[in-house]
Image (cartoon, rainbow, N blue to C red; front, side, top):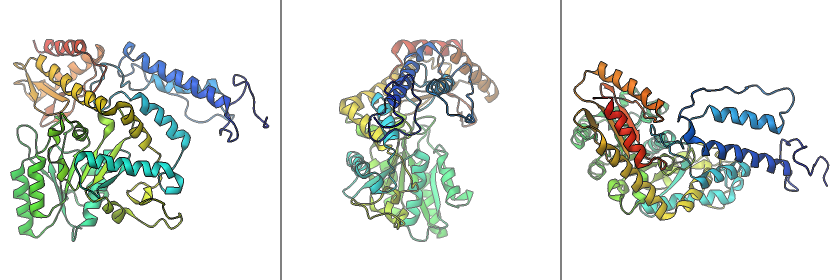
Length: 466
């Protein structure tokens, strides 16, 4: 037996690093007990509120001496007690579904492997897994041969990298503008700031009554820019807006961008996964015409955070834009180093969570999640009192609504009071500011939400307007 080992994990201390010469029984015990805590937390979700009533704060600074197993487990429990609970059936506020069980396990393995997708030699098998999985997504979305992509920690980063790539691949775009709808995601504001563009470089164009970007407004603006001899860096279409779940007219925008030789980026962080469905792929018609696509499996399929993809019609444009040569690394055995196809250098093996989660679901499971989310939204909307409530139309699993015929002040007071009332009853909706007032919004990607929950929720809402 090696020095320092102890066959009895109950009396041993957790070593800072697991031994490389044999299975560490203390680490095994710690991980098993941690898993017990996590499973108990998830399994008791319905007994509590989606948001914790109290938010206990753990000790922040490390003690002088190392903490033992019991102290570490206690610290974890304190953090869990103050956490948001996505597995609660009433958790319907945001695009944060419960995590897939396989994705949870993959997260653990990802941490244990501690590989780095910066370079091929630091993640030999995982680098090729990421490249192959990105190619699979490109194929399923209908992108041509040669398409590729990279995983990123969230749609904000994917959108930024897409626009940086668009600028790098264009000519004379340093003073270019970006056209998008007034309902596009706030990450585009961040992207323009990071790219050093002036505020006026991001042009917000109007939407129609269904919340979709007006093609005529885009065409008019492109013609105006041409007369001014000012380049358009990109048109950004949204396939699933945050408040309404609206899908911009992708085919028409693609035709327009092709006519004007302008890059089309589609922020499909919310809706892109529907392109994987045979039944619902028509929602994403035209997505395959984009130059770049952001897609976030974390928002509906339950892949643990973060899980975002940036897919490119021409995959080589990523390395052209972000490649540095990595002179301190050996040459990759595959196509490229993972740190050469995006802004991130060091990256964990988040591809494991996505890959294993999709393997767990299979085609049937993916279809079921997508269809059920749409069905829940439709069932909920059909039970709301449309004579007193305005339901904002959308095409995905999101339903926003507000009070009919009220001034903004009274409507805002109603939405604030009702949200708190619903929280007390175990239902968490969000309260986004949209247009000139607040509204309430439900996101119906939670598989634990039953028809009975939807009926009770609708009755509570209807009761607030009678």
